[in-house]
Amino acid sequence: MFDRLELLVGKDGIKKLKEANITVLGLGGVGSYLVEALIRSGIENITIIDFDKIEISNLNRQLMATTKNIGKFKIDEIEKRIKEINENVKVKKVKEFITTENIDKILNENIDYFIDCCDTINTKKEVIKKCILKNIKFITCLGTGKRMDPSKLMICDLRKTSYDPIAKILRKYLKDENIKEKVTCCYSSEIPMKIDSKKIASNGFVPASAGLLIASYIVKEIALNKKGR
Image (tube, rainbow, N blue to C red; front, side, top):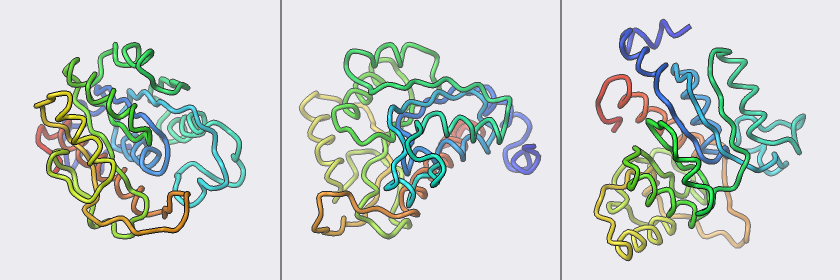
């Protein structure tokens, strides 16, 4: 089923993808597209982490959300899609909210890549600290809401970001914690739109594009041993 991809990455690349262990935290607009792109790219060992249920407001941007599964757990619906695409995929589900108390248990396994697609700042801080401590490769995705231009998305060092409010908080965290290591992130250089609402404005293409960009980066690095930029 991966003969078209094999033309791009070779048999050895397909083998590397099948043997890689990937963990994805957060199955929203970014994470849902990321997971599916990874599965369609030959990943056969994946841990997915999410504790939310599908809501009607998710219909505009989350891959698995339909009018038929509102109220069901995102993690279960994503697993169904994974198995329908490739029944050989080994899926580990963690239906928990990541905290300082349980993050060590989550990261206490053989992980080739940890991708943080969650919305919680404190969780992002813990992921950065623990992945660096445990020498786990990781990418953290920053804000995709209030933006309309997917071409502004890029993958870079967190210290090279601008305009993103989440990035600003995390850059300060790196400085305060004296973290010198590179922190790879997916971020948009687009200035967030000013929206007169407490809700985070979103669409179906910027978060999705972020998920696909991260998938591209990871697949290239695993299969071709080079950075995905």
